[in-house]
Amino acid sequence: MQATMDDRQLVTLAREGDQDAFTRLVERHQKMVYNLALGKTGSHHDAEEVTQTAFFKAWQGLPSFQGKAAFSSWLYRLTVNAAIDLLRQRKKHQGALSLDDPDLPVVPDRGPSPEELSEEHERRQLLWQAIESLPEPHRIPLLLREIEGLSYREIAQALDLEEGTVKSRLARARLLLRKLLLQKGNLPTGSPSNQLGRKDLLIKVK
Image 1 (tube, rainbow, N blue to C red):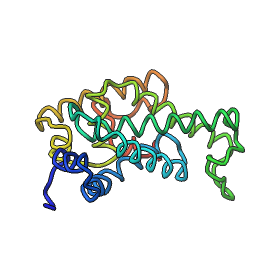
Image 2 (image 1 turned 60 degrees about the horizontal axis):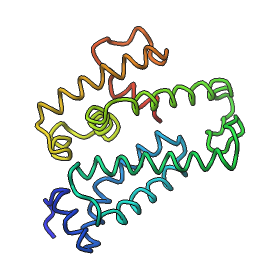
Image 3 (image 1 turned 180 degrees about the vertical axis):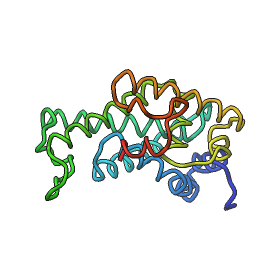
């Protein structure tokens, strides 16, 4: 199998039952899927479960995948849906989230107080609510750039777009996200007004 195959070629082979092709897709996208799942759930254990579920759903759904959207875009939706389903199951069985919830990080000695942890968890949720409210053409490039760390060229190849289009959508996505976060009080007013940097996103997502 050629090492330079793009997603579209690998998907075609995987749909024909080529497991090696699908393995290549998993290796190519598993970091992005895991990071998305971690940002959504806030738990490494849950992120691993969501990642496995998302790729299992992708394997099952390949025969019906028409390729109208990029594979990465389709995989992103599967990941978000898997995370939402898992969180709903958690709430159903465990009730409302509390400071004793095992998914929250353990407070170390002389570390953040329970109140600070709760506030950080709330900020993270507000961030992801804002991200999810972005239009998909702007949301997905933003996640690929700021969370996955892909270059403009890599994003353009993944989404079948021109690099100029990717840059334009990213600029618009950052402005929209910054506006939403300021409205919710989740971004310091002293931050640069022209963009929301990758560091700002990663601090709140992790």
